[in-house]
Length: 418
Image 1 (cartoon, rainbow, N blue to C red):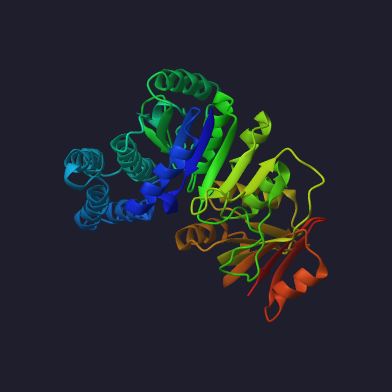
Image 2: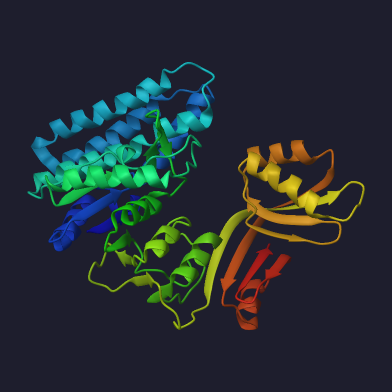
């Protein structure tokens, strides 16, 4: 069995869905599990819907936009036979309407997961129906029946033992009906039957979970790029494809923020020694990138840019040395408010770290630490990570910029610049 994952860009419109069908037809000679994200920017729209709901703003316009966008895709795909699919879309969106009618006081993270997860339900309903429409029999499976998680909404933790049992039981039954299974990325379910999400961009992780649990032959992530590039073309010219890379290098790049692979994806694949292929849905015959248990590979310097960063500097108000006790209290606060220190460094009386510019979390951080620390913030910064750096790559990255933080190991350099 193989696992394919199609992200939002690969299913953003009717033409893209037709392309997904073309790719699946190429490879359906053996059992396939197809993991699908929400279409295009649907997740962003659902997030806007959740925020409007909690801010007591009107939600009907956003909901109608979601209904119309998916309805138009269905009409383009199915023509005069679209009505049953449109009814399915409307019935699926009823779950959102119910959630919006829930009483005030419900936890934001809980409501987020119940509402935003509907994006994957819509995309997989449409794609499953289109595959059948084109004569490709498949079984639609609810990922909430496969992946069991805890109640840590928006970043749920997988119960691997339960998930393995549920996944094998459900997929084995589904494969008796069809050679292709269509399911959702990004989501799971609790033992109380509440929906959870695995973290933003978590569909890659879903594919890895299902592959690990079923002992799949491999996982392929279909992207709008030729494979894993050594830099984002938005920030760098003359990028090159990395044809092969080790699990370790892939984990490092994912951790540092490469947009091609989700950070949690690699570990379960490495544990089960399941290769990962990153290929272009625009050119399915191109080789792409292979991630596997390999060594002695050609070293290609890689650049990762995290824009819109804030450099936070903390100095104890009593000017005491920064010790392990300070680290413990600071990281405890960061954990509680779900703020990530993307890069950190300390001196005798200062601890500095780069984080994403989230005004709500930054305000909460200041409220919690203001009594004990002088707090400095530098906004509009960038965090640049260079894997396998040398002085030439450092000079090229910092030219014309002020270096606010410089942290290096033997293989990686992280620079906060402005």
